[in-house]
Picture 1 (cartoon, helix red, strand yellow):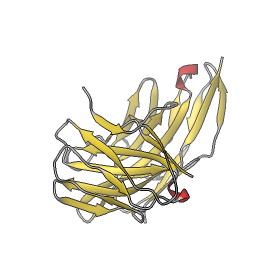
Picture 2 (tube, one colour):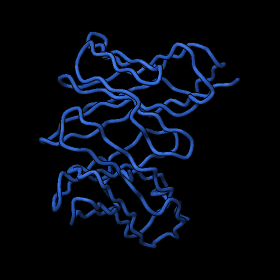
Picture 3 (cartoon, helix red, strand yellow):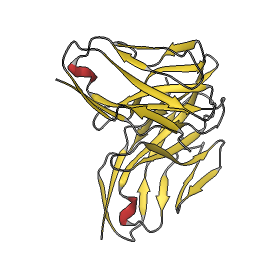
Picture 4 (cartoon, chains in turn purple, yellow):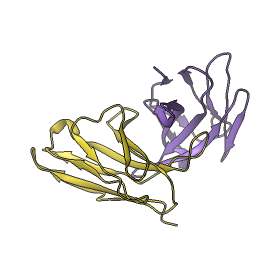
Length: 114
Length: 113
């Protein structure tokens, strides 16, 4: 079945460092891909998405490019802030029996220190 | 905008007790979902619904029941609570299929002791 694999955390960075969180997927066809962010004590919020190969999703300084050849959707940010500390989830949209569902990775916790 | 609203936010249950987690959305979304999130894990789909009167099982439905009598509401029922159901529960909704955004509620923290 379809699955998503993320790099294990926690990832600890200093403010203004470069961030990469790796995400690879296994799927039939070309699913839509998503990054969700979960701040402490809150629900998940959509951060960015890409719906086809070579699409780049971007939001709040974060970017991720849909790479069909490597089945990857790595999340990057050039300069992280303390306020970016959260858990980040990579997900793909699966269409099964005509219905669409999200398949999530295990999440990667990011801690940014001043 | 309320979006997706879940209640209660926190609850402690004793083994064998029953309870219902409430979920309501005001976006006229046809799709609604219940996920659970265990520590250090991604979200697992419990049940989902594609419209009023239609529900289907997800990856981990055992021990839960749902109903969808209206477009707005999608309650999740735990009949006989077990410690394995200690988790954070998220309700979500979306409109249609394809790349449409799924919106999540803020979560319900449930502990079974």
